[in-house]
Length: 466
Image 1 (cartoon, rainbow, N blue to C red):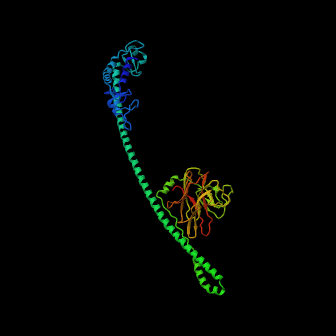
Image 2: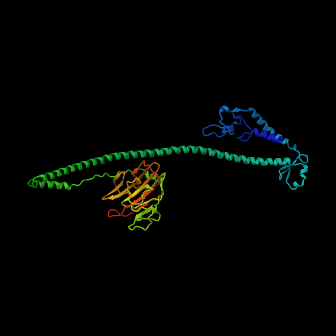
Image 3: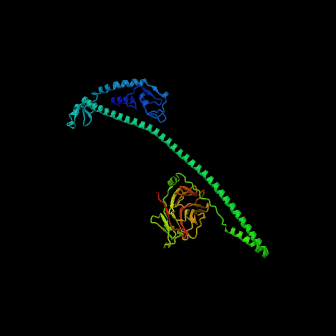
């Protein structure tokens, strides 16, 4: 290794890796690395305030810092001597080819030349300067580039400082936002808890009132039954009398019997209780599933829209192939989608259709012959008009009077064995099945009724995500 390389290696050993300058007031860390004291404490600390070594990333404690006076003295001495040593080396180099002192510098080839090299043809048209002049010129260039680099360094340091401030502000803002979100959800939770409590209170009160009315109805019916039984006994007694006595008592018995016969039993039917739940539909619609109708399963009397989203009844059956998947007796059609996992939600517009059946069924459900709504192959709810009432019915909840429903929401959670029906307009639950052990694929189920004098032909329409 030549003298110049040794001098440069010495400079590198006495250079701080943070500021890239000679050591100033250096300290040596326990791990063996050395840095300027000020540079080290300006070094970025960790998120928890821990100072780490810029070289090996080891944790630095205050007790690990040892001032290195010898390194300080050596840095000062080398900083003073290095320029003189390098300058003194000028003129010591000799040309390997001609063994003459190298006094010139060729800017094109970027190499030093001796007198003989200068006369060579290859350097005839090159820009050649005396070595001192070339060195001064090179120093000027290096000084200028150092100035530019220092300005650029300052620019990056300024940018780094801004990023650090932004990082600090971002952490503060993120923490503030987190606390705000927690606070907002607490308000929502409290609101829903209060709403739930109020609904449960209302349900208890209305249930007590309705049960009281049912008890009164039972008592009235029991009294009417007793009266009828007494009249039956009275008529029987008259029948057992001799003709004269029978005729004498008959008029009173007939009159009292007529009064009893004019009485009709009054059936108390408590109204269906609905409780609109705030935000219910918004939550359910996060599980919205695009449902279309399966033409291969449609009863021949059912007419489908072109987008396979709507179905209505047709008086004249269509000429369709009687495949194994087609319903032949039940006015039903299945959704094209099958479910074997996950959560799914869809809505159906029933509108003015006064009788309908909606829900899910097993993909293996029988398509031929009649299908009972109480079958375990289907989980549905039926809406129908009965006299002056609109009834909701299924095999589990029985029948309940209700206001007519315009739009029905169906939610399926396959893994939890849960299916629920909602009045979308009111945002309330109609009924739900829970803890069903679903096996195999399930499909959406849609059924209309045969129109008659009490029911109007209508359509069922699967709603899109409006």
